Amino acid sequence: MSKVLVSYFSASGVTKRVAEKIANAVYGDLFEIEPVEKYTAEDLDWTNKQSRSSIEMNDKSFRPPVKSKATNIGEYDTVVIGFPVWWYTAPTIINTFIEENNLSGKKVYVFVTSGSSGSEGSFRDLKNTYSEINFVSSKRFKGNESEDEYRDWVK
Image 1 (tube, rainbow, N blue to C red):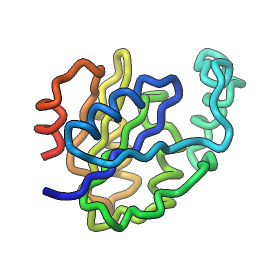
Image 2 (cartoon, helix red, strand yellow):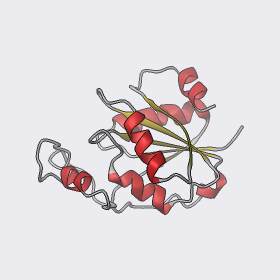
Image 3 (cartoon, one colour):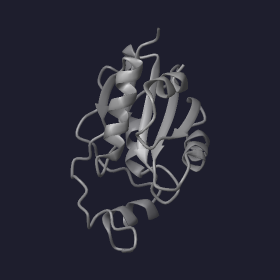
Image 4 (cartoon, rainbow, N blue to C red):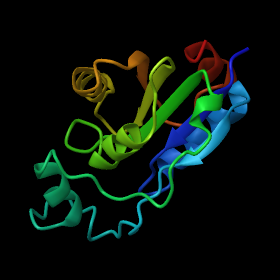
């Protein structure tokens, strides 16, 4: 069985809970993609054009700094990346994570959490932006899936 890293960015705790369940199901290690400056409720207000998340998502070149890099990424064959969907795609902090870690030669799975948006747009955007990476599959999870569902997804 390959060694799996389940990495995630969670602004409100939902994605973290799903990441923990996936890591448990696939016997993977957890890595939090943690911003240097945590997001507040005001930062996440997508209806406010001046909120931090709105400003970041309107500048596709912006890369929020993260607290730490996954220093042992070379040990893993499979990397799962999880995040909440923002503006129908991945938050820009996911680009920070991808660009700071060498994912070449790894199988990369993407999961999202969202009340209504699927994973397809985020997955397509990441595959188009990072065409050299082997993105295998994407899925939206609600957190109520069985361990078998998580395990079957990350084959």
